[in-house]
Image (spheres, rainbow, N blue to C red):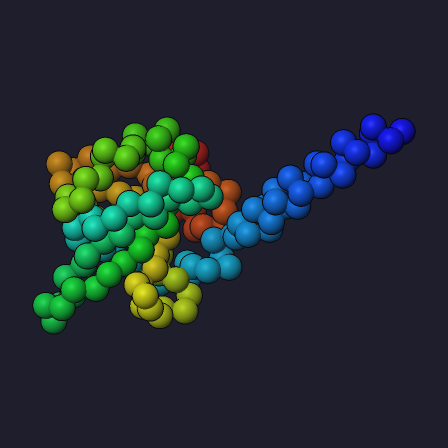
Length: 146
């Protein structure tokens, strides 16, 4: 009895840590606007290969010639790997185009945010970079929607 109670108490911090990670995940509609599609073309400045979502940072030249910093949320690193995107696919300075949806708040502090759906490489190769089942619009990008 004492042994079982000791094991249960020792696992309690792990359970608390894992429950925090689950609570921290969000649905598409909590942060992004399905009615605000964006197409971004720019140079990769940074890639965060982290869970629960990878982030691709872009320097996008605006119409007035200024540079805007964008953070584009992708699926999990595992989802991106299955789509054909890996750490070495996006070297710093490479030119890419991303089609996705802007954040609801449309604030650009510290950077503008978007949820990425399609990533198009300079050679024309297109890959799905989103995560399925998050409430994002069914726009034909996700191969599992077909």
